[in-house]
Amino acid sequence: MRALELGCGQPVVSVVVPARNEAGNIPHIFNRLPNMGGGTELIFVEGHSSDDTGAVIEREIANWPGRCVKLLRQAGKGKGDAVRLGFANSTGELLMILDADLTVAPEDLPRFYEAWRSGKGELVNGVRLVYPMGRGAMRSAAATTR
Image 1 (cartoon, rainbow, N blue to C red):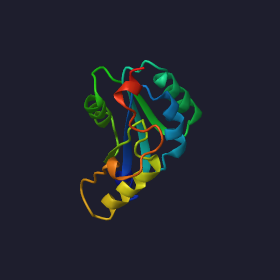
Image 2: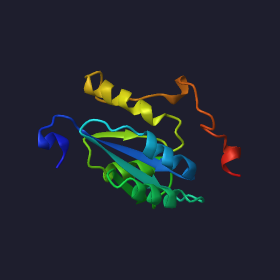
Image 3: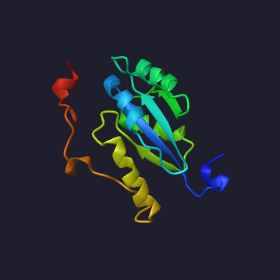
């Protein structure tokens, strides 16, 4: 049952994480993503990684048995395909996207939730290029092909 059906008044939040070659960031996502609303569902969509991203996600799922987490394997290609797959498999009333490269900090997602909850918008969108970028974020194409 969903949170609104249970009468607690807060929506379940589904956070879709497209992940390709981001094995090093996966533990940080588990450690840093706060719980929001009536509960947070974490949906990883692994996209043909050449590193051990999928295995790291599986390990972290085992390390966090109380967390609601799904791992999907992408048959198609690209971030758009990954997001559509994640949304199609979500159970939450509110959908969010968190890039596995952490160009947006997981700790910032409650800001989007609160903007929506307060009625400031039905669709809340952030632009990561207006904030300071973390070290290693948005690596150049040359760096990602090595």
